Length: 112
Length: 111
Image 1 (cartoon, one colour):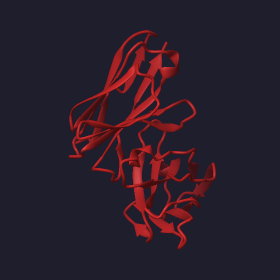
Image 2 (cartoon, one colour):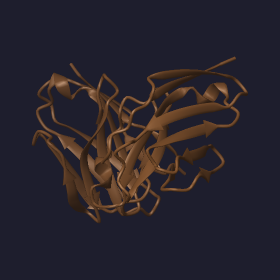
Image 3 (tube, rainbow over the protein chains, first blue to last red):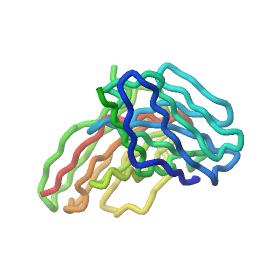
């Protein structure tokens, strides 16, 4: 699976949009971009994923560039409870899917 | 109605002991995983089972033995525990190779 690069930390004001970038310049054509987050002491929580098109669900939006080499996770109205480590990973839907690597992620701190 | 559950949540034990961690999912998934998250917070795959068959077995000491009695359960047995085994162990499940859903974790402390 392709590696990803994320900034180690970001701050965001409560109520504002949080935009978390991720670079995945070596992504393969069959690899999806996944976002998870891990709130302190809890298990990773699935947020959203996409292949080519932008995606939106009740938690967030995912913007993938046309060349698929980078993406941005958008939390439209960040709350204090969104403070967590956010992981961007790329993985194919094949037998090696479980080998997708969770890197260091971005620690998002939402401030009042 | 917890989706992926693990027991126990905390496990403190002495070096040399044998212990088991249990995982159950009620999502109807056919694939289950064990991950280890060490003190540096790096999350690493250990094992993966699909329909009770082992499909991923990363470089893990053979003191670790997964057991899948059925598609909804994947237990992890650890023999002769060592200090370096202290970590948080996460179970996850998916439908085939689709999105993985994680359990709450088991914090293992070896003294």
